[in-house]
Every structure is written in C-alpha cells, then in structure tokens.
Length: 72
Length: 355
Image 1 (cartoon, rainbow over the protein chains, first blue to last red):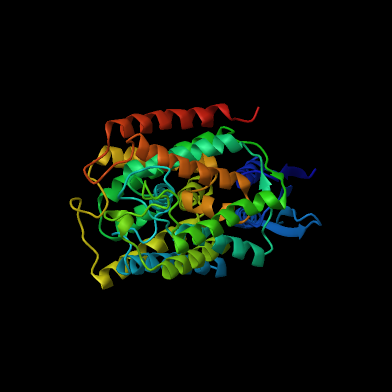
Image 2: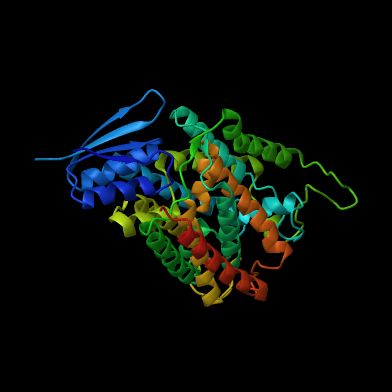
C-alpha cells in the first residue's frame, strides 16, 4: 500500500515534517504532493538522506508529485 | 557537499561581504542589512511613527522584494498563494518586529553584529535558538495554520508593486505635508541619516533578493531544519554569512570585540535573549525569518505579504508606544510586550493545531 502525503499549500517545514512522520512509521512507498519548489527540494533531500529512491514529476497545474521508495 | 550546498555558501559569503561594504559606503554600523531596522526606517519615512532618528526609505527592502520577484519569474516559480491563517500571520509579523526592535536587529543583523565582534549578539543568538526549539516542539504537536490556496495574479503582484512605489518615493522624496516636514520624512541625525548611495543600496537589495530566493535562504530555517531532521543545508548559508562579514570587517577595520559601545546595540543580556526568543518563535510559526518573508512576498505568497505588512505595523507600534530599545537599553513597555508576545505566540502555537 502506497502512503499518500498531501502537503500542497502547507507552510515550511510541514511538507518535510509530514514526510518524516511517514518514513518514521516505516512506510516503504510514499507519494508526496507539494505545490512549490522549496518543498520539492526539501522533501527530496530528506528522503535521499534516509536512503530512499526519489522520482519526481510535475503536473500540469504546477504541483509536484514526489515518489519515494525504500531501496532494496 | 553538492552544487546546492556551494550555492548557499556562496550566497551567504556574498551577503556578509556586501553588508560590510554597505557600512563602508554609509549604512549604520553592523547594519549593512537589517530587515527589521530597515522596515522600521521605512515606517518612519512614511510617517507611521515619528521617531525622528529612524526615518529613511531604505532601498534595500524594495530591492529584496523585486530581486526575489525577478528570480521567481526566471525560475518559473511566481505563483499566487494565500489564505493560510493570514490575519494570524499579520500578528506574527508584528511580534517578530517588536522582538527584533527590543534586541535591535533581525536574525540577519544578529549575525552581522556577531561578525563585527558585538558579543551582545551571542545572547540574542541563544534566545533565537531557544525560541526556534520551542516553535519546533509546537510544530511536532501539530501546529498548522492551514492550507494556502491558489489566488489571483493581482494579489501576487501587490507586494512587488508596493516595492516599485517605495523605490519611486525614495528617488523623488516628495513632501506631502510641508508644515509637518513630511511624509516623506528623512532623519537629519541618528541611524536614519546614515545610508549608502541609493543606487548601490538598491542594487545590493536586488542581488541579495535574487540569490536568497534561489538559495531558499532562511535564518530561522537553518536551526529549525537541524533540530527537526539534522539537515544542515540552510545552516551552511548561516555560517557563510558570519564568515563573510567577519572577514570583510577585519579587512575594513570594523571588527571590535566586546559588549560595550557597540553600534546601535544595548548590553541588557536578558532582553537581548528574550527579544530574539520572540523573533525565533514567531518566525517558526510564520514559516520563515523576516528575510525569507520578504523573499516569499516577492514570489507571490500573499500570506508572507501579510507578515511583511505586520512587520511594518509592528515597527510603527514599537516606536509610537515606546517598545523599541535604544542604545541605553530596553524600555519597561518593551519588556512587557515581549513577555505578552511570547505568551500570545505560544498560545497561537498551541491552539492552531490539527485535529
């Protein structure tokens, strides 16, 4: 089951904090939605530092989808 | 260390060096940049307060907003966002400003004071860290002002347009009420009468605003991110500002180690500590330090714009109601409002939690 973290519209550092909470709960696969580049960079940096593989894609309305997978 | 790390370090070094150079060119001591002091001087120039020694339209401030605006356009990041606890952010801006004016400097000037040898700033830094840690604890307990929504382009353009108007007022200095001598008021003596040439101040603001937007520079964010996730990205920029201004001060002969007789500073350690604790707490709840609020207001974040306007009103309140410190020390009213501010901000942090 993929865990969804919808962090669109949230102030710094809530996107990172909510992603971290999901990681700390032991989720293996997390989808994070953010609406600005700062949150994109911060969430990516957090996930990589925790040893996750990160893939990102930009939606048409300018939001970002960040897929985080625990590397085998 | 990757490319981003070097970019934030370079940005920090440049800000530190530019700050010392601005002092050399005329800005007050250890005040090459100060978001709080400069917004306060603008409030004075507009006649929102009548403290005669701190009135000048500092071009660095509108320069910062427009620099961030340009950087956001270049990076395709200019987006209208707002509606996340806007009126609460307005009050967080007021308290950020009052705390800063009791200490006598925003978090950026705190670093510049440290880099000039002003040891009073160490107490400010200690208070700032304590305020941030308290804010982080509230974040962990679910503090959230709610989601911002996408808004109109018109709303996003308000702060950049205000910046343009301020620059025009700074250039043409019209006097609207000749009997009163202003607005636009201009200090004849004191910190408000000390300034670098307008074009250089404006250029420095534009450059720093542009780079700070690209680097996401935030002075409360550095300590916050380290406390939350051990992330040191923003802390690197923090250290770089300190090193940059320290080296430039040593070269220019401004470094003067000690507590006494520091430029635009007082030696009351408790209130240096508590003033900056209030700034730290309010900055965490508002999602960024005064510099970062200015930058975000330039890239279309109307909530950050509300925080900046709160800072402007806070500056007027601080001087009209005798809350701001002077080199002689803090005032009784200032002390009372710092305590009230800490209580109110802690209350905001506690009550604005997710269900």
